[in-house]
Length: 102
Image (cartoon, rainbow, N blue to C red; front, top):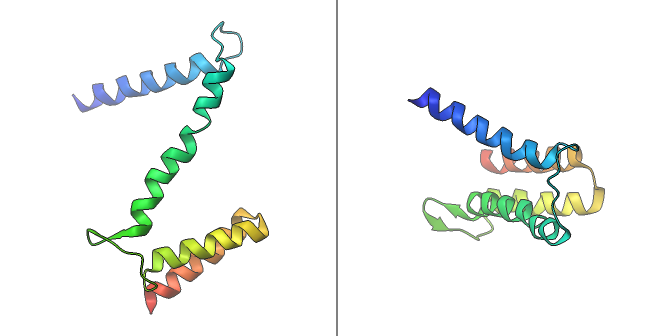
């Protein structure tokens, strides 16, 4: 049963992406739909990172002892100033690991 579910989900995912990405198919997305879909990636990413950073042990944590919040703040500042993914990742990961060791 699990294998059937995985195969069906793979087919659905492939088909939905293929229909919109293959250039020779007659399906085209309109300007309003494209504009609407441009908000989906930031919304999904926000739904992922907000609970990781702000919720620890089933409570909302915005204290300055929260290593997730401090490393995220360092990541935001580094990304804004450097525009480098690798520098941002390295710096924020280093800060996070050092804060977790303390």
